[in-house]
Length: 111
Image (cartoon, rainbow, N blue to C red):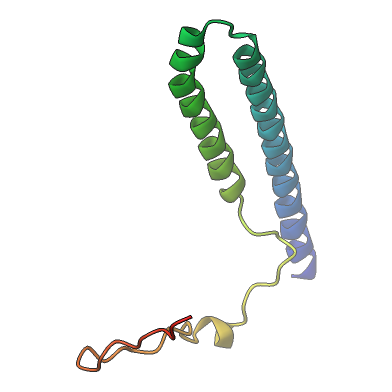
């Protein structure tokens, strides 16, 4: 059983390493694309070109940032974290205190 657990952790570790390599490659490509967009932006001479490029460059930056964010947040938790024990897993999550709809809303102090 202990050997099987070690094998599973090793497999998860290598899968995580592969995902990290892919993420680093994605970040590298995105950095290069942002630099290329900046280089094009710096080469624009005509005010009309600069005005027309603002929307396009803004959308490109937005897309690149969104793509990078999605890829970096898509990684699963590290395999070195310990899973919760059965008793911890059955405990309900702590939630915010219930708000009584009949009570007046709390007011923030004036500054």
